[in-house]
Image 1: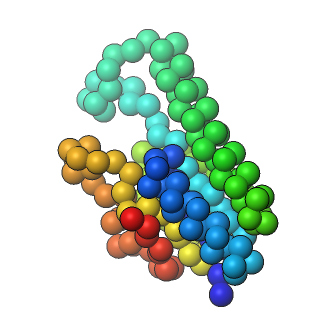
Image 2 (image 1 turned 90 degrees about the vertical axis):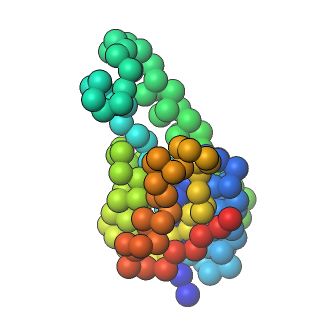
Image 3 (image 1 turned 180 degrees about the horizontal axis):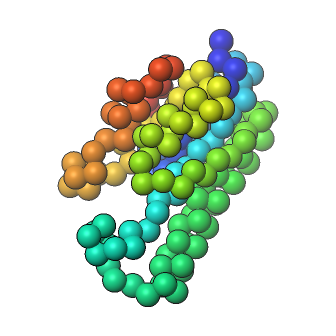
Amino acid sequence: MYKRILIATDGSPLSDKAVQHGLRLAALTRARVLALRVLPRYPRKFFDGGLSLDEQQIRQIEEQWRDEVRATLASVKDRGSEEGVMVKTLTPRSDQVAEAILAAARKHGCDLIVMASHGRRGVKRLLLGSETQNVLTHAEIPVLVLR
């Protein structure tokens, strides 16, 4: 049924649920998994909404983000091994989360995207928009959304 499943995660508890279901589905269908977590770019200009920090502080923040992404994807890979699923990880660097997910799915020939219904809550979600909604709107392949 499915041969290559892209599982998008942001490390949140709800996203973890999507990872769990995606890996189980991959095990049942003997699909390969591409686990993806988008690494944001740190805003460097005042007009980008960033604080004025020096370069060293920005490097420290970006390194912390990279460490979090690595840990999240390592966990997905370990869980995939437990399920008997081959997992490849990918960390695109982008401020356009939905576009990065869709581009990765196209590039790697995925036939299903699995993701959580939302990662953020409250005002942040309203201000930033729903990445899941954007993926659902623009995906050319099926999208499984967990809530």
